[in-house]
Length: 371
Image 1 (cartoon, rainbow, N blue to C red):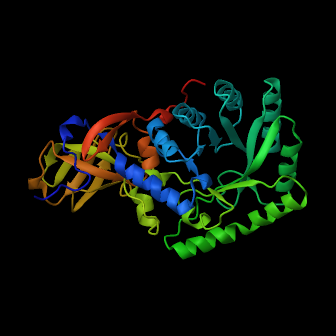
Image 2 (image 1 turned 90 degrees about the vertical axis):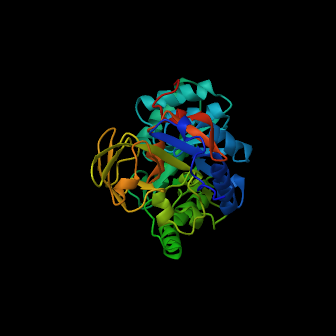
């Protein structure tokens, strides 16, 4: 008997389309591989922005991971609801978000919450607002090591920022956050060299902190692209996230990383409007569309095709074997970028032994849960 490929559902009729499928066994294997690369669960600050699901956070907690990174206050609350006790929000929170962070700390007083700071004025705002509520704001300095997206540049003023944070009574600075997600060269040795070169000035900054007699900082560095490089340096905490679900974009770019696709988009053929063309119910509301159309989805059970158009609810595909495809056929696709794809769904089907067994909430996609 010929077995179906790993991704084919035995109970396809239970899955509406378009839908997000989470293959639980593969998630478990990816978590184990992530722990193996890090060498210890204690070195991981796993980023939850990819999965956004309490059930996946619970899986990681059960496997010994205790520290997590988040992108939003809602993701932090999602992780706290799942039972996480140590959370860093990898953003500089400004304006009303500071009061929301206070509310989060008040609602979950047994959870360690921290955020990022790269500006003295924002630090002063945190200090003032947390003082008003009789609380301490836990922070990390966000260091710009070359990505130029956020963080304080590694210049002669970054030490004064670090020192200022240690002088504010209602702030506690725990260390440095260094994200180098711009380093994605496919060749691992080249990427590792780029990571280490980019970290030279960070090391100089750490030395200046220690020479000044200030507390030795915790260093949280990288994401998924630079995970395998930072993991070689045992004093660094790593914060991969995409590898828990994996996607086509990183799968092609990071050949040394052993992760497996654990999240797919299921879609159905809904029309054959003319010879050579099929239409599916996977528009750009069903798969991340921030990249060019040739970098959105890769179908596992379709050959010789080209996605030529997408609107909100439709995807138009040019195919070579038009006659063999029927309206109602199911296609399984790997997202090029899984993180924003997950963010498009309120819930996901859970697949075990090639059958849908449950649905999981994608709770972290909300802008606000309760606070």
